[in-house]
Length: 152
Image 1 (cartoon, one colour):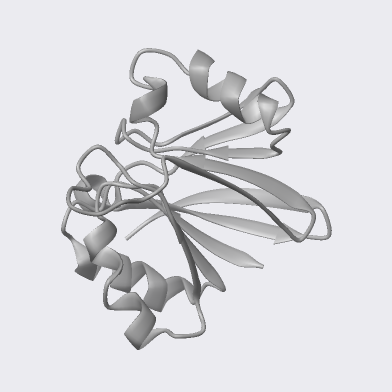
Image 2: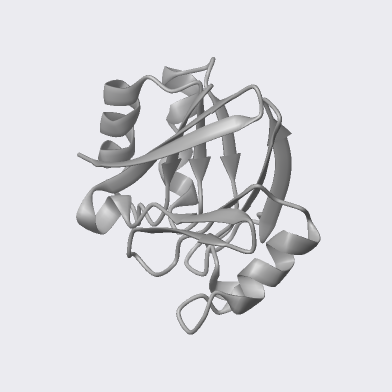
């Protein structure tokens, strides 16, 4: 399964559509701050699954602060990150994801792309698609995964 991972689109829906057109993913994960940018996605790409959480700039819509799900044998914890204070430290985020026994932790909010191993989990921030054109591709299959950072 090929998953497009984006965060912080901040009103630049055309960047999201460009990434989808380029990558042709099976699913899109949006990590907040730009929920409205997903509006046209379902119409243009009805077969693409969409997972999203709310960010600190996603007003007038109730979205979960985090989601946990399993796909192809990999458990994913996703959040925007502001409620876990990720600009200061990843400690709260790591603790929450570890309590869910996640394999992959996805977050945004900082606008800075990053990937590191923590507490047996791969922790990934795709960066800001809206400001720097940064996104990621998470490939998941048979309990294994790989991640690659890309940009438009």
